[in-house]
Length: 101
Image (cartoon, rainbow, N blue to C red; front, side):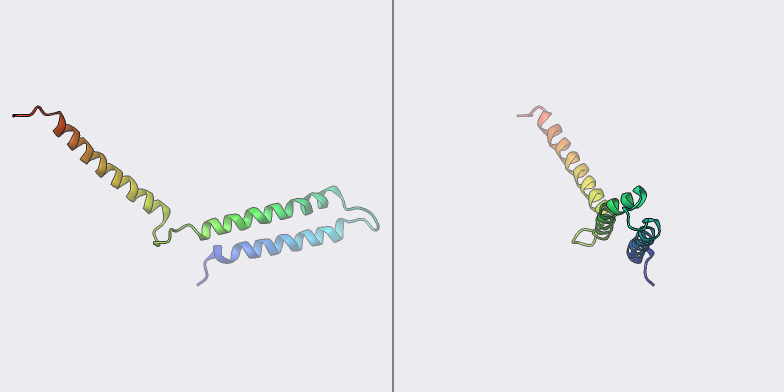
């Protein structure tokens, strides 16, 4: 079964484009310039489409090349840092002990 997110963006963009075209032809006066609302929609549509495509790519590429999610990789990094800190504390404690020699 197809996930909702995989087809939602193309359908939303299609609906937005059809809406803009309908607004363009219905709100444009005969022989004149379009109303300010239609002009605003048409001028902002490329920017909104660009943001939508960027969000779609960022969601799609949310995993590392190993297949693990970024959150899993960050959690592994935190665990490794904690192990390293514990070892460094043991080394520092061993160096602080006075030598018995």
